[in-house]
Length: 187
Image (cartoon, rainbow, N blue to C red; front, top):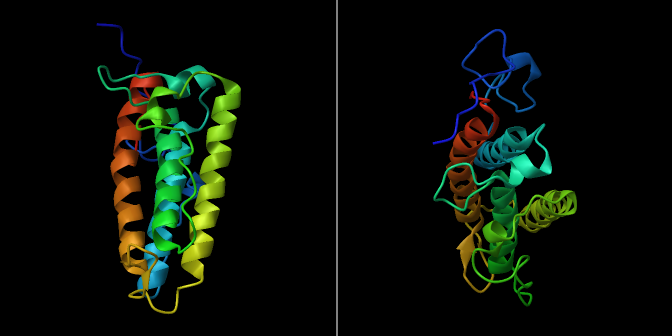
């Protein structure tokens, strides 16, 4: 077994946190948002930011590293997978012809996540574009979270809860992957 990196964090106030609360870009301070839609949006936004934070400061090789064998999962693979997920949900709630897969056949989002700066840059650009597209679709239907959309007849609420579930699960994976890459731990 290879030598594991020493555990570390940038936090100085709480050594078990990723960063000090004052440096955290997620909206975790102050009163909770008012209403169901604002609560769901904040959760999606915070999990999206969490994924970005878990990738922050790594080079292409570190992002593409499959650090928990025999899994093919890497941080870059997660970014690509979540871009694909964002596109899939948008495809399911629109009446338009579905857009094609971003990365090809099943598991290409993970298998083709290689240590190449152009692949990394494209993955983050894909993720941002697909997040914006899904957000735009959902924003057109924010008056009634129970409205059912697209061929799949999915409720806006259902889509947002599934996005929270998907990001939460994969942010947990990202915690472990990041710790194995360079030892960074935290919230």
